[in-house]
Length: 480
Image (cartoon, rainbow, N blue to C red):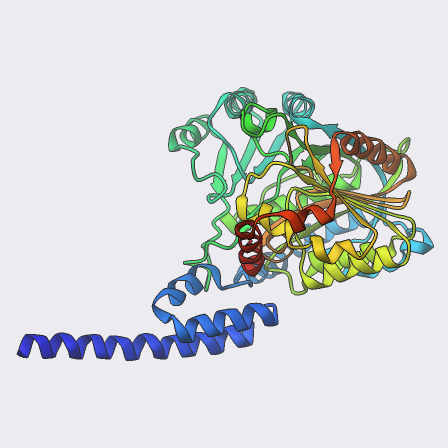
């Protein structure tokens, strides 16, 4: 009986402690969670089911990445001369944007410290073979250093080709810095990384669980894909490194994606993003080339926009919403994941209401089931508006593209979902150039020709179990 009473006492005490913690964490959620819906969902769960909700909240509940901004402020203070040099080199090319896009200027300066610059050249790279060929060629041409960052790196034929290319350059005395996300690249074996290290290549995970308050969090990812060679040429876009991105995954083949090759001040801006991530991971300042080599012939106006959960403001969401609000005639978006927050959804609706040609291209095949199902939950809302949804049928579409009118086009890593807007470290290249916008238009027209137009009324014919799964997925949007 004494044993039974002691066990009962223990469980009673544990219950009191867990429910007290649940109430305390519910208060924390109310004060800190980004959206009112998310705060309500977390607080109800933490009070009602604390045994389950508490560990989930510890792992998934945070939306602010601690320590990153503070670390950068510290290193900036220590290296003021270097920071000033880098900043002044880029800002030499600062340029005013067309009047219709003027509202983007203060946002760009607030979020990046640098506005749009001239002297850039951007080249679209369509799909994996063209992208990898251009990247490997740039790596082979390196004379001083290489900065390579990827969310996913796979130990397969494609990953091994990049590994071999880096090792070859390292043996030639080229300094190489290789940064990966440990969650995205969780299957990457130590043997792959050790082979790089043995050849004097600096290798590091981003360390998304490093820092106060981040220890147990799995929500934060560094989703950026960046390659910088000698401070003269750079790449970013949707492609990670692996066979899947060459269309060698039978279930998702062929793989449709887009990258971008850059010259000009945008190279130094992408380089700055990489260096900040590298410093967070290693507390190491890398010696690089800050001398801008402008491309006077192309002379495109461009902006590099790195965003993430350490931002003081919700930079990714605010910039995208503002950009969507500038659309007057056309707004075409290609994204693999469509889980917009309320502000973005409202901006899309308003664009349609003022007569903008709004087209959204989504995959017809899922690679993440819940995200795929969630996109159907917006059908009824779009039905009353003249927003056209397309499902890409020729394989899996993974590109992240936005085209506004005939002026502004964006290529990068941002999906139209909560994760990209609020939880991931991302980067986008925005170009204000009619010629580049035309090349994006031509590319998207080819994608549209390989897509089917969504008939929103067909959703009404779906079985009840499918609609229920869609609604459950919509409830999970804060986590998707």
